[in-house]
Amino acid sequence: MPRTKSRAEALAAAVALKPKAWGADFREQRPAASTPGTAAVLDEQCRWERRALPQGVLASLSRYSEIPAAGGKGELKVSAAVTVHTTVREADEHLATTLEEPLRCRQQQVRTDERIAELISTATPYGQGSNTYSDDQVVEMGKYLTGSGAQTYYWYVTRLGTVTLAVSVKGAKGYSDNELGTYASRANVAMLTRVESELGGDS
Image 1 (cartoon, rainbow, N blue to C red):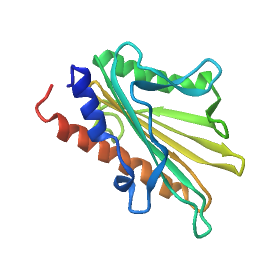
Image 2 (cartoon, rainbow, N blue to C red):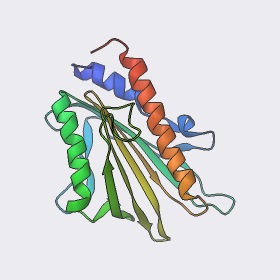
Image 3 (tube, rainbow, N blue to C red):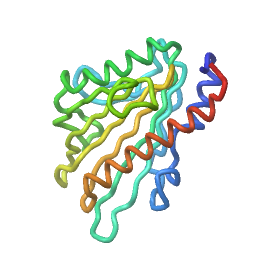
């Protein structure tokens, strides 16, 4: 597992999905990626914001993609994030916090005109259910709220060693829950495969 900032940054850059990895119809959002040296934090007012990397985190990168609105369908927004921690304990605490956040914040402000609500979280440690591929996983499902209404929201957070991966899919008009869930699960598998490939024998 990465033990230096430079190695962690290289891993995050190699693993976080760019638009074409999601599918041929995706393009970059604006901005296309998070500010270097920052991590996403849910503050005391239940608003998501970027802050300087906390102690225990070597690197964090989020990439944002979308399918533009067309043909009667709305704009579909997705994100892929990679966070590299200094220890397994720090990474494990990241997932524990993810599991607890919907209890603290029933409704969360993502951006000025975007909120998520009615989140339900499920944790699946390795060996439970169908999880034979990661050390731990939290899956959240809820509602993505904008001025144009409510759509389904998916968020997968998965841990492999000291690395946590996060995938979000914000539903849009014309997309079924099954389609949204497929985008999320495929992206999650793709990033897990990349982590395993990048690390190889590195431990």
